[in-house]
Image 1: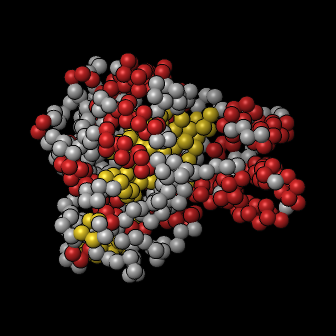
Image 2: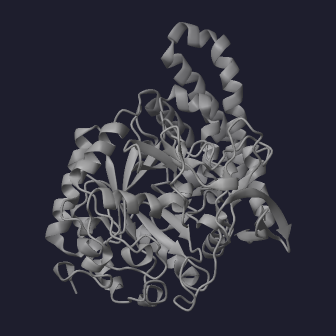
Image 3: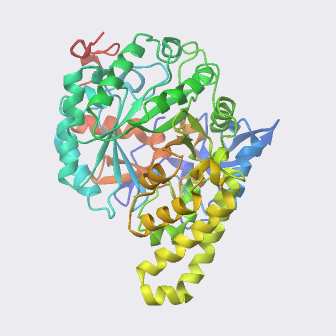
Length: 538
């Protein structure tokens, strides 16, 4: 998307001509015109059981983007969250002039757009972007110095391209530590097939977001045009298993007709590796490739939810932001941040799977009610506790311990009403429940207590992350977004933040100008296909 950066105001950059809307005006939901790329009014339209984002462009006429294959499920998420709809205050999408999200929970940072795979479905590499982005360490120090002032500090996610092609990646991770930030690396894992490099990287204590789309070379042929990387990824995962200091997250790009039939096997793979795999993040395959390059169709978040339900019947997803509804309980047990708290109900959705030691099961195996019913009862109980904590004699006498006792007792009541005791605790349910309650009051972690006193040995967290192309972005989803990209403003040279979904609109122009300012070589100076020879492992 080309932007006009020639008009400046308030030290910033603005999108050109009629797309500008002042913050003082009443702003309706807005999006990007698919044809002229301007900000225009938009609305949701249901047609044939699907949801479309329809844009009303004064110059190009009406155009639209496909959002969801399941209108009922799409609307259900909004109802769960108590979302009022597009009449709520939305933003102007003037992201380049706005320092969004003063206290994000998650900050992404592009470290390079070089890659040792250059997949045809990717828009974040040199062939797709048309220039090279490889800033020096001074750039990262500037970013970390600014982001490090945010309290509490957000998680940092190092993004690419492929971060491991940078020979100074370990220095970047250690530089983040110097400013009190923990950096996670989003990687395709190819270079980690080199055991020596894998050991050095993991010795920093960094967490990994490891891209793994399933156990079949056929998947990688369809998505990546490179089936041989499958064996490299398996080798890398084995190295990670041996040398990791913390558990990792598997990131899977999910596409209808690509790897849906392998999803059940991927869940079992995560279970077999549960000693080092904590979570599974799934990105629906959106059509960002050139025609004829990939044999796949657009896959929406609701498609992925149905894929999971087919692979593991009874799986229920909830809006990830619903966890922010537990305000009192989070405060009493000093849980400062919920990663996607406050996000839009049609953004991330999440669930958990529970291991009985043999395989993963949806929570419904252990519940008398549906997972969503239990969660909503817990939200109602949290609201009740807000009032009770202010008037309780126990809280007056015991202070913080009294708050924990009161909340723990309320949670125990929910547990007694909602779970199948024998499935969870075996024959000594009363004793085990008391031990868990006592452990929570002493500050022990719930996951450790579950392993000790229940048949629920491990939990796999699953999140669907709808990273979308520019045509799908809408202003209503950007207002409370808790995840941002950090970047250096091309004019002011200050470090700024931008909502993750909006980054795709401005990214290329910002990073191109940043590259020129730092004197980074053009794309002709770098190979654009295949892994660099030094990283070959198979």
